[in-house]
Image (cartoon, rainbow, N blue to C red; front, top):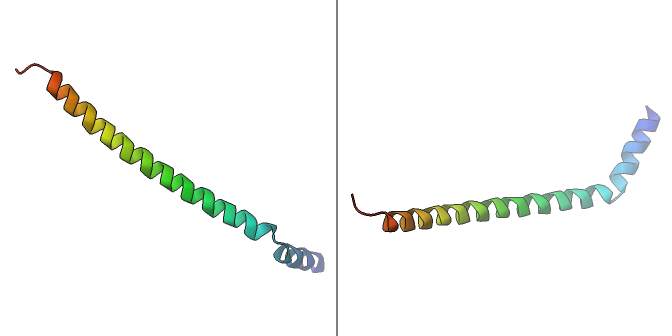
Length: 60
């Protein structure tokens, strides 16, 4: 039990953990921004292609 406590205290004293958490948060934010940009771009492309397709199609 004492060994577990010592290893837990040494883990909390090291700064590798917070650095990894900071990188994970930054990566999550980048992923969210990329998903939002791709969604917006896809929506704009869809509306543009729909407009062009309806313009090219001959009237019925």
